[in-house]
Amino acid sequence: MSDENILDSTAIENLRSLGDEDGDDSFLREVIGIFVEDTPVRLRELHTSFAAKDQATFTRAAHSIKGSSSNVGAKELCKLAQELEAESRTSLDGLDRKIAGIEQAFERVKTALLAL
Image 1 (cartoon, rainbow, N blue to C red):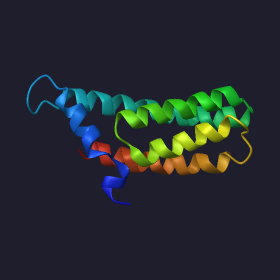
Image 2 (image 1 turned 180 degrees about the vertical axis):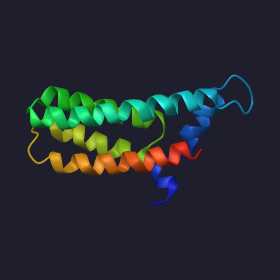
Image 3 (image 1 turned 60 degrees about the vertical axis):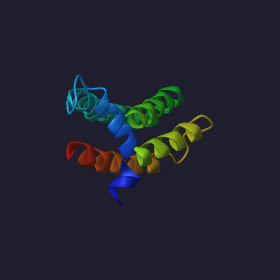
């Protein structure tokens, strides 16, 4: 999958532009750091809430991944999390299989973000 399908370059540039001065990537780096640290926590929440059949927590975790993915321009991950969130509102049946896809998408995003 190409980087353009993984990351939205406009979102990255918008984050980059929020730095203190021209060429200052500190804000972008901070946002990436938070995303890279927080998303695995949300992925674990998906697993544990699925196992516990806790639909509300599962849906919140998917929603959180969707939002943070959108913030960093992670297009594919955001789309997958949005689908997972929507589907989880009616039932958790079979959604465990989709968690693996979200985890794989996160790894691609993480690699792309850390390469910036």
